[in-house]
Length: 420
Image (tube, rainbow, N blue to C red; front, side, top):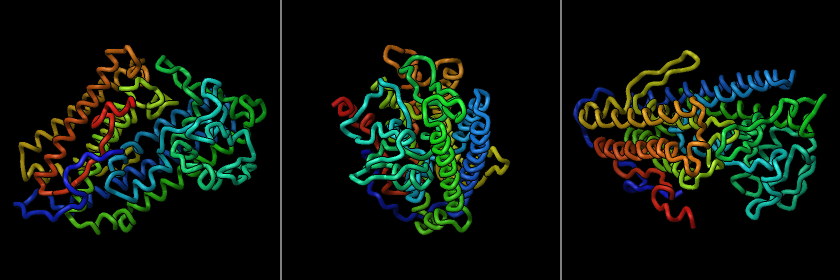
């Protein structure tokens, strides 16, 4: 991705300010507490997902499959609210690809419809189908995939051939296994994998025992990866230590880098505007489940959590503490009101999208060619995100933090290049 530059990369020291409602150290402590609570909820909901998947495997039917899908959707809610921690926190960004990489070439994992095609010039593993094949050749090396294990997924399949779309682990690999391909394009309907794909006694789709092993391995990996990040944000964890080593100015810059980069380049650009420009359902974040509207919604909630220093937990450990919002209110009340208004406007735009999806028109339908009303709803979200990023930039200036770079996106910064 290109970067939308607001100065150089290093943060400078804070210029002396009048007495604040919150000190930088207090704000950074709250920021860490919100991260710990949100990742803890992500872990607990992933464990609940495992329970539902185990029930599906023990008794594969449409009811247990529906329950596993519901548990996956529930697990996405807290996780998506962590994404404002990606940009600026190297520990999170380096780790994130294991759990949330997308889009994925699903033919690496399992059977696909003939419309998917048999090969790709960019990806030699486009239809490797590890579930159907106990032996794979990767980079000239023969891989023994007789037993599908977490180690096989992480060491041999994830980004096989150094190709990012070879996603073998994380939420979206599990999503594909639970839903299967969404073959509806920009028409109604999500993936429709039958429960019998997991029934070793009455198997459809072939290789049900290996599909079960893959689903179990991917779920166990998700839990272990989330345990790693919960530990990183514990009181003496590596992420907290890395944040503290940046000093007050560097820590505050990290918070605003995360907010601005997720708001602008990642969410407004790569996840929303690009798919809207192309009218392409393959650019939909949760493309198998049609849960994209909620992923976008929870990203926006996560930005708000970071700014206001508050988190409403699904597991009872809420956070409410000193925040960037407090610092801005003390320094520039007018800007504080502006920033709150912009965040509220963005949330309102997402509420419209969410209501439309819940009313029966999924996100991939909204971005479809010729759906002027749906397109306008999605564009309004992009516009609100871009607008709020401008106010985040003004917050950077108001707090005397120089040299922050927000992630950019060709879809916003150089749209003609998208079609070249």
